[in-house]
Image (cartoon, rainbow, N blue to C red; front, side, top):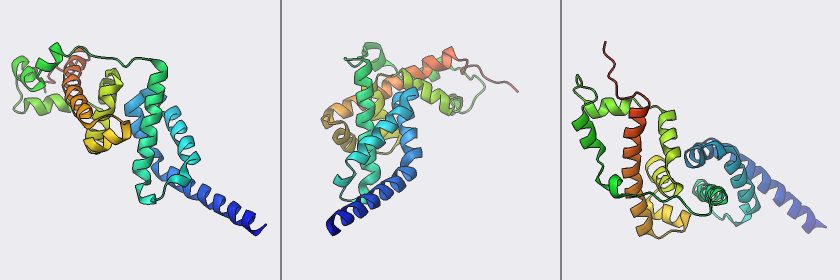
Length: 199
């Protein structure tokens, strides 16, 4: 009977430790999920926390808990994407590969009275604009882009999380950056961000 009481005490302690971990990591997980799956973010985080709780006993080093939770979240987000579309979206990169946002801004000169043309272009984008652009990207390019450039993970860590070879992650990062630049320009043109505000 003492063994049973000890097991119950240990399970209660695990549940409390997991609750504290989840509470501390929830804002970060939601922010990542919003960038990865947009409107499905809350459901993805809920899936993540449920799976993480079920396997919490396997976490040996609690210092690694944030990275572990991120990996679980990435897998939950990928599962949601697979459920929506059996085949990931591919993008034709003939036009995207030759696109240069830097050259496009210099050639088009959307802010003719600006001394810092590229900075003025970027300053027109808010958080919601960036989120909208990310939402247009296929997940195979969006996931590595968000994890490396917004969350600070190394490409090799993303390769482990997503179970994709490092070379593939690096190629997707390159293509994702090019696609993001092109989508930024198109978004700016469509949403009136290229008009200079004259004072």
